[in-house]
Length: 236
Ligand code: FPP
Image 1 (spheres, helix red, strand yellow):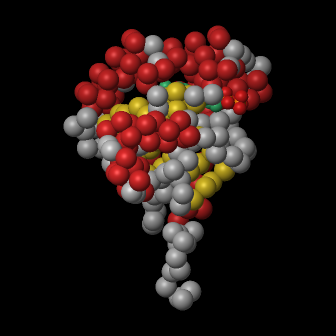
Image 2 (spheres, rainbow, N blue to C red):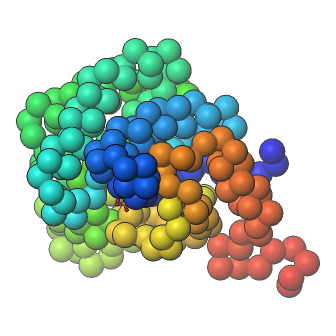
């Protein structure tokens, strides 16, 4: 397919509704969602996409019922511990963005081990947003910069300076953002980075997302003209 995004970001939505529709507990939707995500990493790489970033747990998701939070943390723990082999086989680099200080110590250790084990891999750059909020990321970046630099530097702060202090430092901005299950909002995801991203809203719930659904999003993306605030040839 022509014109594939370099960086695809996905808001994984609808796990709970998918489960409810099937008469299952909400947690069953998250379990299925995690399986779909693992397969999707391979599918997107085969399409030529180099970066995949997903919203797995927002800084606001702690407000959910405690059994649901516990299950999501278990899935994430299991993923960090059990996916090294598959990541190495697929040459995939895994990173986590978000406020890691808010996570349990053992989860932080597993994340560090997975990030370290896969840091030399040159295939898909897979990034999991965990305890992540876009506003929080920007505030943490400003605090980090102001703790490292003097007032003169902060007075002249540039966009590049700020971008380099974000969790996504060094990564290209997303070209395409997909949100599943019909909702059309951003929910505090990658606020800085999606300034010029194209958006695609899929009707199906995340656990039903598959290669055919991805192809529909990629077809829509490839038909769009990106202007980044300027004009394209023929419009001048
Ligand atoms: C949104 O559905 C989904 C989430 C809050 C969690 C997404 C997490 C996973 C798919 C699994 C964990 C990830 C990894 C990397 C193993 P929702 O619960 O908001 O659905 P609803 O809007 O229908 O209630």
